[in-house]
Image 1 (cartoon, rainbow, N blue to C red):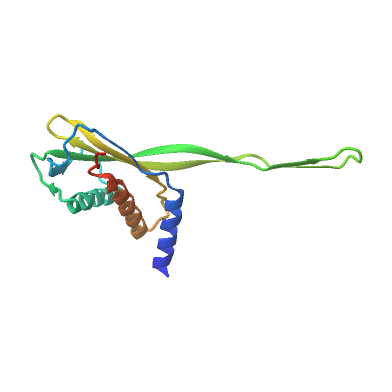
Image 2: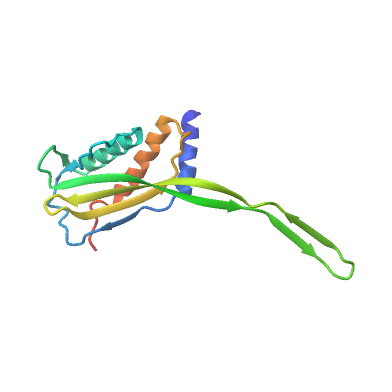
Length: 173
């Protein structure tokens, strides 16, 4: 039952999600580079639980594609970040009916309600280590709420990262 609930909620979120947007440098040789490392954390940066989940999901995706993680002298550097966006959503109801001759009328109005919605965008970039040039970038956005249980958060992040990496390495046309 719990699995079914998790599956239904993930499908609902997937239906509302914006598509993954990706871009790449068409001059880059994606077949040549096979080693990677993650961008080093800056002093004072903390590793949140979600960042750890993203880190593990990206690591798994790249290793599944035949890339090898190394600690030094990698040909590629992987960096990721969560960009938070706040948008305002407003709702209100207003009805109206009118007639003439017999002066029939009807009206209704409710106050406009506004609420703040926080959404996060996951941005993953792959950088050519030799010249510090971004050669591939993917951006995706899904709603990850504070109320989600850890296993649901992990499943959603894994799904998101897998979806992002379906276009890596890019297929030239």
